[in-house]
Image 1 (cartoon, helix red, strand yellow):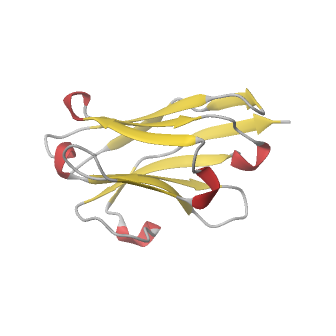
Image 2 (image 1 turned 30 degrees about the vertical axis):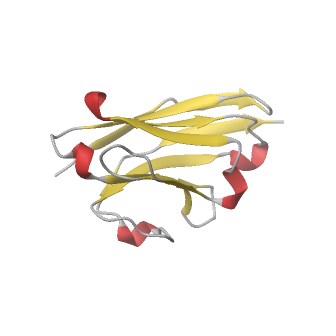
Length: 125
């Protein structure tokens, strides 16, 4: 069982940066594939980025964030991060971290077992 808590959201101007954190409880965090999803009002939850278990050397990104966002993890701190640069108003959404035990090439929300409560990111123009 893993419990996830996101933090780091807030209000930022377009072009700015934010770093989201996802703190996990439990000693099994290192073995979980972790991901970030986001959901804007009236829209479905969509995949943002994924990082592999253990060393986290494998990552994957949605096309709309490539080159702007970076996912990482610090297993010693049981924490995953999402560094978001060059933010645009279209990035405004609730951001959620999620965990599962296996890697998948086309992550969908239904494939993840554990979820955080989300943190709001609002980008003003």
